[in-house]
Image (cartoon, rainbow, N blue to C red; front, side):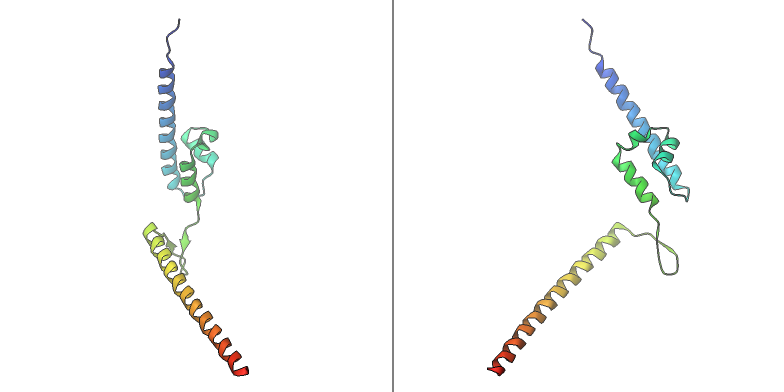
Length: 124
């Protein structure tokens, strides 16, 4: 009976996957130094990995997608990088504004209902 050596195969596969990931991350950093948009094919070629393997790595694909987004610019044309804290602050301000507007709408609807009631009262 043969001995089970599958653990060697699993270890080798894990090591290949880790080195492929390291090469892909290094290739992403290398592509970050260029100004052109990068494709999955270009990343795969630079990293020496297959495109099909890259498509099984959603976080690497997301990094590539984010990297290819055009930078936000101000009216003067200067690049504007938005931090996560800034986005959270803007979202919080938007929620506060929505709450204020909702309250204002409620008050206006109430005043309108009263005005209709008074108008109806004067007609009777």
